[in-house]
Length: 114
Image (tube, rainbow, N blue to C red):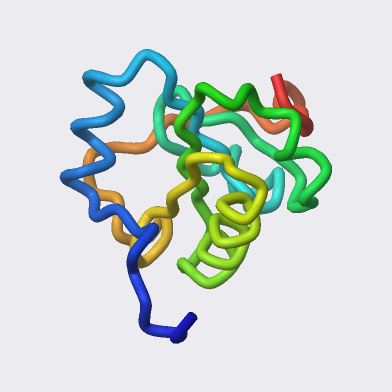
């Protein structure tokens, strides 16, 4: 797969539409706990960047991965697709999200999947 391939990428508008209409959507933020606390997409969960943590996601879910830039989430979405998980990433990463971020007191931020 070419580095510029965006076949599993979603732009901001596409992700916003999924958030509004897809009840099986799981948004996984792969960034550090401190960065997540400073601002994350509504309904996203903080997940440690390991393949094992993300393979437990229910197979009927659509997964969108968020990272600082798109490189980490793009690689993970490709890996998850190889395991038959419907996974995508936000093109450009969190810095391309302009629809508003939610903030959390860092002491309340955990990691893991649900």
